[in-house]
Image 1: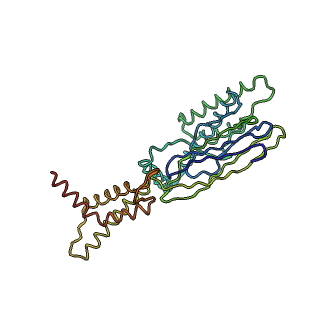
Image 2: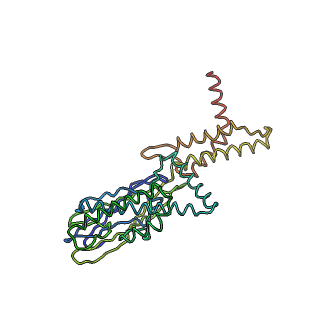
Image 3: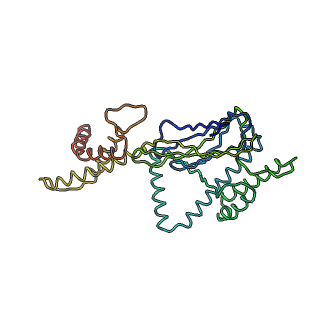
Length: 334
């Protein structure tokens, strides 16, 4: 970043769509003087940024300073959540329908990747807390729109009282009031790691995204403020539900094609829910057996929605013989 700091960005080897992943930014002081007001922010992360506990290492901040930083960060998140709820209440019926559809996709994805964490998130200068007037303004304009007695509104009020007491303790023995800053100080040879957690976007095929972080810090010796953006490219693999979904849709299409072909043959067209459901379930089973998994080798591997659709369509086309074979096996066993 500059001559007195080294920045390292760490990412997992593989990121799958719809799954939680973490990135971290480590700032190391390689200079001879302290670095103050060190802040790392996520500007662009694919998917939904989630609130995560701040994990700082080798920082010489006191317990009161750490408590102040944690309270400010939590209050900023609460403001962002209150704004999101306010924005939803003001949506038109059509926009609410679209929002509900997207939420349904999120719920569907959890069937394959685990439970989705509904932690609040927000980034933006408008909701940043720099001084006490920001606290008062955000409470009046955003948090106060929440219903009286709501958990979010009460939590913000509790944190506000805690922050005031924390500032009063920090002001003891000083002539000036304490600033509401979340910046940290790194001594020479020290380092701090800023973790960021996100839920990757839903992907039906492999996609490439750019992550971007903004860093700012001040050299204590010169008083120079340095701000810089750090970018990192990440490849997001298809979501776990992409192959099964493609296979089920493909199996349904294969079944429809088989039935259409039978219209022109001697066989009469006869839609049967049992055969249709069996074709779809058989396509799902084949997809689960052939879907790509980490650290495993398969002769046939299906990686994305299109591959799942193709394998499902083939299964749907030729599922009748397989279903008849299974039916005869179970009938014979009985």
